[in-house]
Amino acid sequence: MRDRVFGTENEYGALIIENSSGKETCRPVKKPTDTLHISREKFSRLGLISNSVQSSVWLHNGGLIYVDCGTHPEYASPECRRAIDLVRFNKAGEELICRAFPQCKIFKDNCAPPIDLDYTEVVGDGLVSYGCHESYLVFGIEDFNTEGFIGSLAPFLASRQIIDGSGFVDDGGNVHLSQRAKFIYTLAGSNTLNSRSIINLRKEDLTGTRTDLRRLHLIVGDANLMETAIFLKVGSTQLVLSMIEDGYAPRFDLCVNWPMFLREMSRNAYGKATVVVFPNGDRFSALDIQWIYCQAARKYLSFTDFESEESEHEAKIVCRMWEDAIDALWSNDMNWLVGRLDHATLRYLFMVEEKRAGAHLSVDRKKMISQNYRKVNKGENMSKLLAKKLGHTRLLTDAQIADALVNPPKNTRAALRARFLRALSVAQKKHPSISGAVGWSAVVFGKNTANINDPLCFIDPGHGFNGILEELGKINSGELTHKPQMTHNDFGYPLEV
Image (cartoon, rainbow, N blue to C red; front, side, top):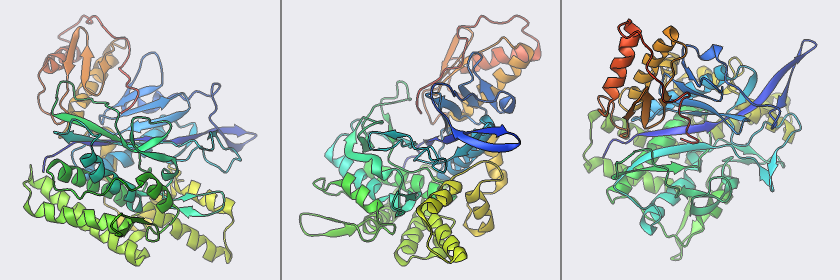
């Protein structure tokens, strides 16, 4: 089982805070009059903002915050090699986004903007769907558009929302498993804005000349707040990808309409009632399908070779927790589910409020609770407060998340990017006019470009990287007094991670 890198990109909903006559109100961000800008003051020590625009900032943790279309903020985590690290950097992103946009209420929500303002932005017949995108490094598979790859991955992803669904309240007050499911209509394709697919076929590699590696970019999942949900979403997916690479993954019939199954299953908040029927008469629910993959993973882990002891340890934890989640979902064990899976936690909040009120909740009240659950501003983060109250459900400490605000993962190329950013930041304090360029797979300073194509390389990539650091070191020590000629005025800004 090879170590791989993975990362997430979360698009956040935002409301602009206004103070009128001492009363705080909020309103949606509307184009083109309201363009979000990242706060320079908040990021003087955490990252580097482009010199000419305040729409993107490369962070000292190796990640990126940017504004898409001028209206909503996004956070792309640094590349991680461990699922628990990705949980850390995903949770750190919630605080970083709030620091970047202190003028806003921020929501980790797939269906945005928030809905307590009698404001609904629509495209066609549905709400705008903000994304929680996942990226995985895949080894040795050049073509994702094959029956074998799709038949092994799509059923897993279609049923995975029983684990990673974050809950959704429709206009009738019905509670769905997933926010994202209603926007998924095709099995495989390259469109990320309309007719979204379970498996995204668009080739968006950030690995330079590495032909043995390919980036799988998934747009099918929900934005999660609970640490366990994030851990299982990413951990189980990378296990399934390893099984596919080694030819050991379960494979299902593609005659099934998997996008329809995904949408219909989401309407059943427990994942048991909706079943897929195969030509031979076999019937499986989402929990059945997840159990098949989980047991295949358990067998796979019993004989596969691991790249490291750390990798083996985490893979076995993922598998054990995956089994626990499925068992808890089968038995509706709310003691296990609440504080670990988002959709179950949201249902629990509805039950608590109904008991307090002594009556069924109105649709508006349910939507308000759902919205407040996703608010991530400091002091208003209901999911964080609940997780702290249910301390036994947490995987991380506050200190571990705080470390992820300023320090990168140590075992991916994010560490190299962070080294460059820190050195450049020190140089800019002495010479404010100095700038450089940075991207996911390269850094530029003066006339020198250093490629960091290999996502797994974190020590010495060569290609001039050390030369750039040496030049910055001389500037920072005063040994080099002249300012090198800049070839770029701004930091590189990729459209998507």
